Length: 145
Image (cartoon, rainbow, N blue to C red; front, side, top):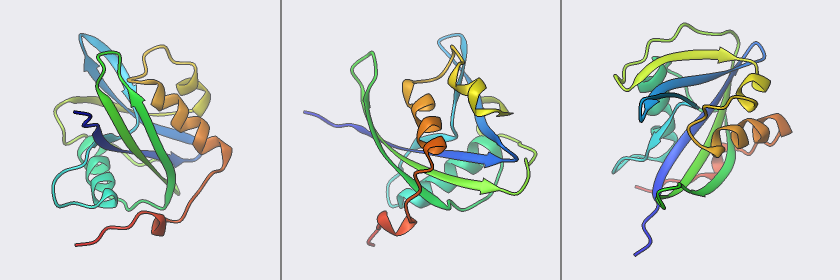
């Protein structure tokens, strides 16, 4: 039975740089956007804000919906990823609340695009989507209780 993992991710921009989180996967440092799994009874927007806080210590609401990404990992795990974005007026200090996150970095987009240690191809693709200027209203993502 096909049961994809439903995840959210946040492209966070401030002063021309993007926020990435670093975590150790299989003994290697990898970069990702603040991201994680949708939990029961929460909306996609709530999940995105929660993951942003847990992984960076930043409390903020999403501003834009960028799209949906589908990917199958090398171990055949399928993912459906809902991508959001927000622009901050300045780079904020980070303090990860999640012990799986080693540190956070504010980096120029090009440095992320050329990095060899991205968590998945979705990380670079998310940067490219953000660079393209695609922005959809949050109203495209509805949640009914």
